[in-house]
Amino acid sequence: MENPVILETKNITKDFPGVRALDSVSFQLKKGEVLGLVGENGAGKSTLMKIFSGAYPANTYDGEIFIEGKRCILSGPKDSQRAGIAIIYQELNLIPELTVAENIFLAREPTVGKTGIIDRKKLFSQAKDLLDRLNIPVPPEEQIKNLSIGKQQMVEIAKALSYQAKILILDEPTSALPEQEVEVLFKMIGSLRSRGVSMIYISHKLDEIFKITDSVTVMRDGKTVASRRTPELSRQEMVALMVGRNIEDMYPKKSLAAGEVVLEVKNLFVSHPFLAGEKVVKDMSFKVRKGEILGISGLMGSGRSELVTSIFGAFPADSSGEIYVGGKQVKIRSPYEAINYGLGLVTEDRKLFGLVLGMQVGENITLSCLEKLSWHQIIIRSRESELINKYMGALRVKARSAETVVNTLSGGNQQKVVIAKWLATDPKVLLLDEPTRGVDVGAKVEIYQLMNKLAGEGIGIVMVSSDLPEVVSMSDRILIMHEGRMVKELQKNEATQEKIMFYATGGK
Image (cartoon, rainbow, N blue to C red; front, side, top):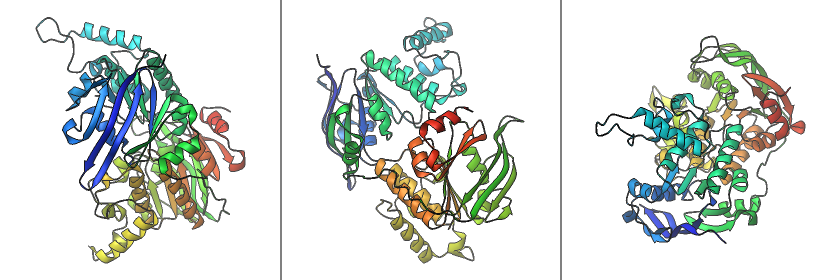
């Protein structure tokens, strides 16, 4: 017997000034089902989630929502909670200094009689019962700040289920998880499914969609363009539905003859920012040539991001070793000096370190090269406009104008603005830390094509990535890191995902 429908939307339509964000969105979620919700950035997924969360009240959109066959009016977060809907966002909503139990029952703590005093024994007992039922191996008295991201995510899920949530929405749940914690999360999702919990799983990682979901709803330009059982769709069909066209080659890598060495790192050590005597990067040495894409792989915590951030002079701890740019030894003590030596860094977290979110697209693009656009410290606006238009056009940034506030753009277009900012500095070396994280399929391919173009122009590229197919397909050489050290170098023709994971996990 087929499972009953627990959630149904009918013709949900949401307008913003000048933009239709959702256009007659209709789909169904069945009891005990994992539904994959996929689409490019800007397809309308986030707007739909804000409707489910009650952040956009029922009087701000058209259409209907039914839960277990009854029409539901979601006029705020409390209504959503009472309806049994819980959303686990990418940025977890936990208080680091409080314990697991305190976070789960925040503002609902059991008290001693009518005294208002928290009954801590009962608090920890209730939390332990809940964690045990969900097979979450976390002590209720542990502070959140001492847990890994994966375990914090499990606590967030436990908190949601403590409200008797029947519908769990997971928004890019693995974006910050190492491989081993992804598998733990998937086991938990399987356990919740068997208990009858219904889930909407949002991800740009199509391998995960095929692995974990029962059915898929595809969104494009604010519309639902397809709802199918997952086994009925091929990867190629899913991508075509998402972007509205066939993408023949997901990883369009061009093989180029590498030129002279443009960046060389010798015996680089980087201190831990908090633990005296500890090193996060240990004795790293490598070269990057003009026109080469050097991939750097490793598990989270292996020192990959610390490596490129310290080369750029932006890591908040001491380093030692030698760096050569264009054959000349340089001392880089700040990002300002790195820019002057011809380096650019696309950071892992574009919102925190790559963009000034309240500023305009154009202002973000020229932020790193204002000196060359100025005369006696006065910005020459015509020169600035020319540069902004050049890179917005070259990278096909989708924005109404250069005056659009960058925070209103989709993730893929925000990433293009970050890349444009560094291209405007005329770099010799581009350090890319997770360049396609949180970016949709169509934008990924555009970024790969751009990497090929930049390599063809003689720029040396260092690409840190957790996406193994990306590393294998787009790199000319791959350095694999484990516990701060380079443990293996693989040439393109010998690299496989299995080999990379073997060495990244400490294999000899």
